[in-house]
Length: 194
Image (tube, rainbow, N blue to C red):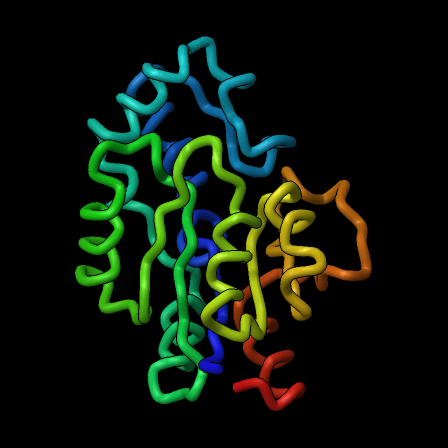
């Protein structure tokens, strides 16, 4: 069975929340720094509707302007010549052109992946992990959303939670807390997975 590592995108590979914060400030004069977000659902901090927030993200092209984290390119490239495939599993179904935008981002930033999966609204990422596990051996999973981490328990052995303000309260030894993707790569190499 082929091996695969599954990686979230937003606020794991790219710093989308900081870009959204900047774009909301530019559009509406509202500044809520990423460090102050206790939940990723930032609507509680903004006097705007969900539709208005997504319109700003689309109009400001936040998905394209967000920068990769310092170690993202090296981390993703580490799978290029590996026997382990790299799947990106991201929750962007709110955007009408999510796949096109995501593929464009990877191309424009010269970032490696073997497959991009856009999870659909109302379908938990754990369902996608189960589907992937039917065809591949999932050797690891990294995400920053607590619900996605909980959903991976029992499906994936090596689970990493990328540290962000909205997941600091989560403490489960089944998921290794990491502050960067470089730490994930080191752990995978130490375990002789990649």
